[in-house]
Image (cartoon, rainbow, N blue to C red; front, side, top):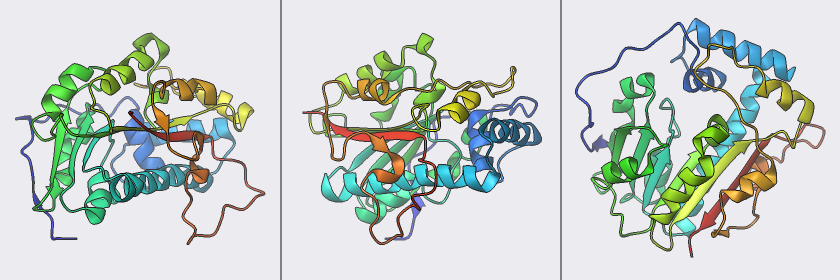
Length: 282
């Protein structure tokens, strides 16, 4: 991989205030991943979630790590096997060491990536996302992913919307309540993609570890800026209506094209409660 260099300029002029009195999903997730961009209120919310699950921090981090590992395998598949050179990462969260552009541009240096989020702390760290190989590009849009037309309009400054794009919604849609019409939102993105594009999703579920995940669904503090809407395998499948699923279909994250160089997950461990899938627009 070539040395990273600055990429697209940020579409903002000043940083918004960060409210550290209310838990935010991306900061809780950052803490559970082992990051440092979180506050006491986020760590307290994370502990409430761990208590609901009856899990240790290490056990929860292992599940979240498995979800991130799926993202890495998915991006490598899309870049190396599917030939995708453009990615739209919706709800990217706080930057970490294995962001999409790092994985994709290692596979293909000319890959172009646009990240989308509207969390102030992600905006504050957007410079960490805006590094790229000279041949490619990486940009960040401060926007609401529930507004597909606005997102795609802005993404068009970096991505060629007349060429295939992989849209990624990793560990994001379970934060979108039914009242926000997540199926309609995803369909709007897909409808505007050209044939040969892809959709990638991972999603928390109550199908696996049902009792613990039901408790987790009810665990966010009342004043938190997020809530969970667990969905079944059949409900997750609806996001891919009209698309062609890539084998092995909709499975738990550890079972999607596992890395054969790594030891398999011990059979005595509970299944990881994330459904995931990748599908192609015909």
